[in-house]
Length: 387
Image 1 (cartoon, rainbow, N blue to C red):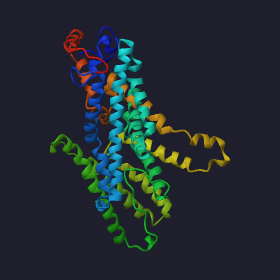
Image 2: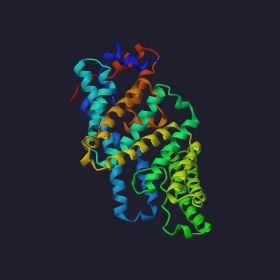
Image 3: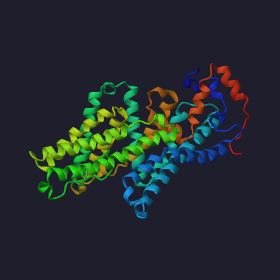
Image 4: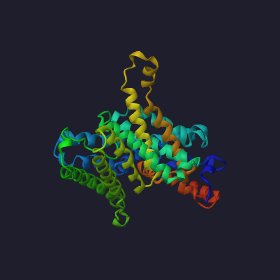
């Protein structure tokens, strides 16, 4: 097996850019157009949870077109933007290879991906939020794994971090200051909750728990359906969501007898985050950190900047549009040269949204020696850039 970094050294760095193409005999432009088509197909399959999860939450209103069409539109936009970014990345790598007459470190693939990701400046807000949340947390986890941060190996510390993020997110949810995504969204208690009996509270809690059980089952079924094998079915999402909302509702009811509603919600939000122990995945902890940071940033942006020029300047910084290119380029770079640091989610995101084009190049580098790689590459017909 040849190290992927050998791609940047002679003689492999002189290979034609046709090694990046999906099909033999394609020109660079033909490969770009083909990638656009194939990336839409593969990204459409990958982003199915983006379509299914919101619809599962709104299953009672599926007949309402106004409720479902924004979900479908976000799904289509996310699929298209991912497809164009991936196809453009490979196209720019071809351009750089032909211009420099060799594969160069900065263009393969970091700068190519960074430039292609500038398409994020045209993303609508909802799609932009989806991308920055998913890509940033994956980059954060990869950085932690790359530098072997002690938190990576401590399950207790990860759970504690998640519990703090849970407190932040649910606190602002209950205060109606945050309406974005979090793993659960407990329904605020009615104004006359103090008059409710324990049976009424229990019935109301069970209704919420059943909703999250259905959502968890949908999420757990996505992977088996994708792999067409029920043997891979694991009820981890169901266990986590049911445990999370169940612990919250239970503790909320218990604390209401001793504390006011605000403090009861805070204690319940923090302690119910211990349900993370049933998942025990660094990926979800990183996602929770990114989401909690977004919640705090939203509170900063909600303040009136008229009296503070520094605050006004900070609020104008387009963090999402700056973070996406840097984080995505970093992830793709790690995918090519240090793939063992990537988690399964980040690897699948890169692999499936680009129709496994990156994996094809890595498979080529897995051949026993350089001579075999050069023999296979030279057996393919030479192609032009345009047609």
